[in-house]
Image (cartoon, rainbow, N blue to C red; front, side, top):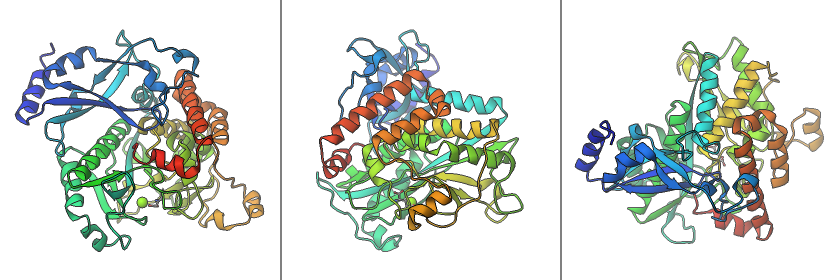
Length: 449
Ligand code: GLU
Ligand code: MG
């Protein structure tokens, strides 16, 4: 037994913790978990708990696809190991603690399908180049009355304190519990969509940002349940409504200097421009990872701030890549880029893996950054878009798969095994959606995130 664990166990026992939930996110962004009794925590930290390798080929409907060659039988076992340093007694779930898990092989060696390990590799690649990254997710979600059918818990107005008042105790619990669970928040507001709220998480290193995205969702679900509410982080809650984005903000720095800080012209220059150029170049493949589900594709409509075309802009909220410049007043280190083509069906570790891989490759090979677009290309004619070379991002599973497989950079970052499993899962989802209406597909994803 590891001696270092006992102070953690003591602390958790004093907090009344009975079980530790070890969580990860699958290739659909769906959190999965195993819970061990507190007494079994040292053992879990030392040798992990057994899980099936087939979680890599679970689709969005809890179906298992056997179409990926290396995981095509029901046999095998891997280990899920909690990160002992990150075990958190949950403020909103007395009796439970939470920890992100890492999937390793039976020999304890890295498992090629582990999403968190893929992100580690990109973080290490950045560090080797003298670069460090910060990231933070914004979480949009629908607040419903409890029950199977979505029923708005607040009626707006959008962005109004009067809207928040209708879910007052819940909103307060969200802030209180996130703080207690060690998830720093930037701000909270009633968003534009019907009964939609948004919580933005403070920036952190990439792995921490992804861990916190999962912990924040768990915390918000628990706060809702305790107040007779239910939340949905699904890309779409209804087919017609405004979608839920989990926008991803990223910045990159060298030696403490933010490379995305503005140059004289109010734009990023040098390696910051190359980083952004890399993101723009690989955007269709990034989106195939960060917003990969069928509802993600249905959410991708012009005019909804969901990023429908392949372009970037300065503070352009219709752009899938919104450059957020800073100033001396705001703090020059705050400059960042926001990826809007990101939602809860994107595994947060993989979304960041794709973003880092694309941005770092942009620096490595001098990716070009065209001038920003400040309008909404969705309002242009298709001739105008062709003339300006601004294509639509894929909105079909086939187009999305092609975009992913076309980018060797993103494929290499995922690694061949994970790319194969991921693609098989997307095909299984697409086959399900082909047999159902868009309304049924949206409904089937509604309560899964
Ligand atoms: N709800 C929009 C989405 O689907 C985004 C709105 C915003 O820009 O905050 O991503
Ligand atoms: Mg928003």
